[in-house]
Image (tube, rainbow, N blue to C red; front, side, top):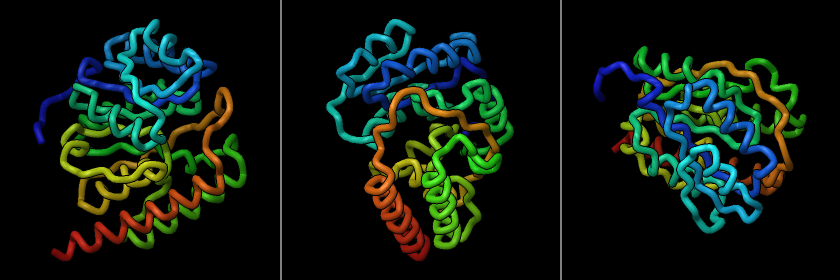
Length: 232
């Protein structure tokens, strides 16, 4: 991994989008404001409600993809990005885009992954069931992964491109958990950074029961695979 110092010109902010016309405009405006328009923005879109048009109007590079799920969209966005620092976010207005420069600074300090920890401040705007589920996911991943992980399903993280390109990502609904578990278990330098978490704009597309079950299975699968890998 190179040791150069990165600027906002070296940042790609990426996200998957599915019918987020109500929310994506303000999110892209926040990214524009906090990065002075210097960051590349990549949106992998599967919408039929004008989300892509709004994103293009605000200067994002939109990649059209048939609806294939959360992980498929975010994974492609990470691979489509061209810059050495890649920051994931959701396009629902829940994450603090003003923290992008701080995440970049932590990558420059030598961290391979900077993971936004919503649970540190209590995530009071998150539905109670989701909050409980996320704490269970974190406890399970910590126990099986052998390292304390605070918020394995957060959508806001920064990565050095080497991390993204060196690991084979396999999960869909559970990609957010995989994107933290595999780097942590492989010894990459991970910083878990407390962030605020706002109420989403628009309606959620994730069913808490089926989605939660898929995430739980992904955590078990990733931890087991990484344990086996470490023994080879």
